[in-house]
Image (cartoon, rainbow, N blue to C red; front, side, top):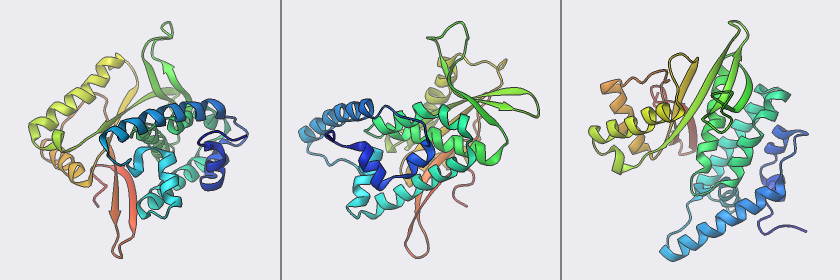
Length: 267
């Protein structure tokens, strides 16, 4: 008997790469479909009241459905996500794949653009594995061992050459014209999101840690952010150059999706 949205079977048909990544790792599909159904029903009620259409990017499920309906933007975005998963299949070993089980669960059960936060985590993980020899050894690890309910770190990596651990925290920032219209507003946004994340997590320079910002927004808003960084070169403690995601059109009009650092994405 299938559930209301039948996510597992829909994924098997239109996004089988997730099962290649999972291998023999089992997800709680009953809970995934229950949580997704609850959140989507709430989302649909809200949009019924406002009369607004649901965006293609509202969830991974919507991307898949819209791609099936022949919508080009969704098809290209799904291709980008598929390639990301294909790279993770190759770059992660069996133990590392087990560690991202919760990331995949959250990716599948969040809507209203929140799923992009978990997609951002996987994109960053892929960049780390692509460009370093670091091994993923933990996810959602408590920062203080004696405080299991305290702040948690997204990823913990091990550097076999130095014998040290690296704590990586990701902060996803959704931007729009309201927060990018002036340099002053961008400065306020960065202070709130980046400094705020560092303070909330209780991170200090005594830790081997790196905060990695990921920005989501339209190309115009991303360009304003890029220009701000080029002009003012803001610095935050133990924070990397931000990443961002952008859809482009190539010389023949095909949609191309990129996830890169903001200082390289327009090249």
